[in-house]
Length: 531
Image 1 (cartoon, rainbow, N blue to C red):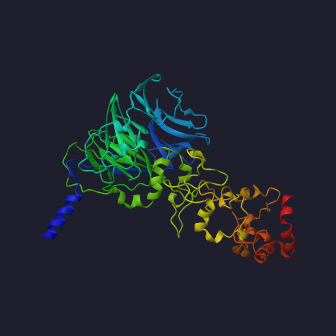
Image 2: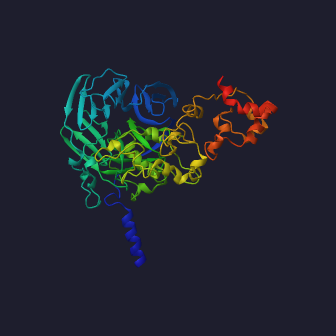
Image 3: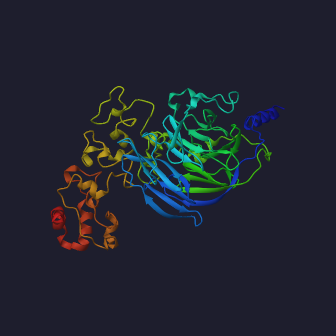
């Protein structure tokens, strides 16, 4: 009897209260899977799918008939600029680029003039009207010049569409946080005079008609709750589809806030890496997966609203899925650093450019950074109370100690290349972000060395068959040629020896071509190479 009661209690907990379920789940099938480099934003325009390629800073145009990339248009974005919105305006792609140094906007694809010179967070259009989202202000556009400001209601002042306080002990807790005030970051259009906005920090989707607004907002990790919503769109059936980048899922809601279920593709919740945008075109749902380097097309199945489901919908913890847990630490940082608050995609691109995990140690943002506790001053800086610009990027220790905590074999000063920095850090040559090689170098090897040693000659004449020489197997070549590190060892050699590698293997290799002249040529290499 006790066992039976235990089973009943567990079963009651698994089934979501009030969701056991009278709605049909949203289902679909995969229609296409496009290889797309770092697709951050997407839009449909003139029957073409357009993606913002964050790696190449270009607009990529895809032919959905052939499922291929047709051409790319470079945006020529400077280091002080970043793309803040991508849309389709008058049948042409419109890219809005913000210069954060001059505090001006630059438009690519249109001569449209915006009513404010503030940052454009998002810009969306339907057949009759457009909406421009600025920090704490919203404007609608009819035609090409008729801008009208509409009331912007802070998220925390909007009542939720459904009161779930009895079910969820965390109900509306995020409304009490100062950081959540006025941070609606994305927009989507619904009908003629109705718009939707997404607030990732309040875990809310706002539906606004004139001065009236309601919101879908329940914080959490269970089905029907949101952790970090980043984009939303409306299906042809009037269902609101919400993309949650932290839970890596798409959730469906009615306008009244009823939860319909998680999107199921080919019978299961799709595994996305870090989705950043979605849109609908008829029954086609398109999702950009930034870190997965893909754009997915899902064909939504038709269904009858309020049709009974085939059975009970079990309460699912979306946070505990493998797709979420595999890089959860990185995912937490990306919630803000994906451009919502600060654009650090250069630090997070899924290439070799940032410090990655190894076979011996998992490396994530929090391996070096701690956003909650005391910061350590960097060399040459002072911590001034109230001046965050003087603080380092939340490092948990000095750069030198951080590097040596893992790379202990390179910690002996006497056997390493002298450091440019006074604190002896590794950052003179290496960078944990925006590196150009798997060794995390700031520049390519020759350029890095010559930045200090410009008085020396480097270039050895090109020889096509270097790598074919048997003795080259024990000799370090770079792209098939001799480089600085062919003869010098930056780590593990005495400074008194010009950090040269042992003579024997070097001269052994040189003698393959130069024979008995090798010692003399070796000692005169830099002088000869400079001529």
